[in-house]
Length: 112
Image (cartoon, rainbow, N blue to C red):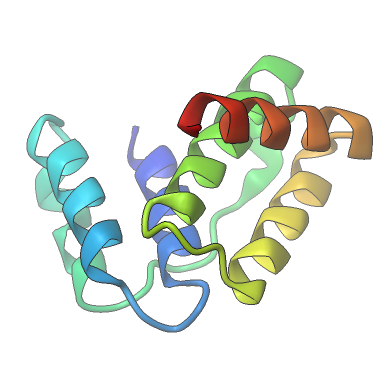
């Protein structure tokens, strides 16, 4: 679970700041998690880079990209740096462009 939080915090910090809506979204998730003590420092500074090798199975990769896309859209504005990080995440996890854009489309439809 810590790795999922690390991914979400990385996306939230991708534009160089943790905006209020992102902070609120993450705070709600962290408060309901057993990982809270391990991740609270990431509210004040970005997390370290995650080793993605353990997340190469398709189901896990898609779930991570989906959560990261929700995090990127949490403040109602997806910054260029967040898109870059999502693209890098896609490549690191080995998802195809088609899979990636399918996930983004699903997230967009669910948020509408």
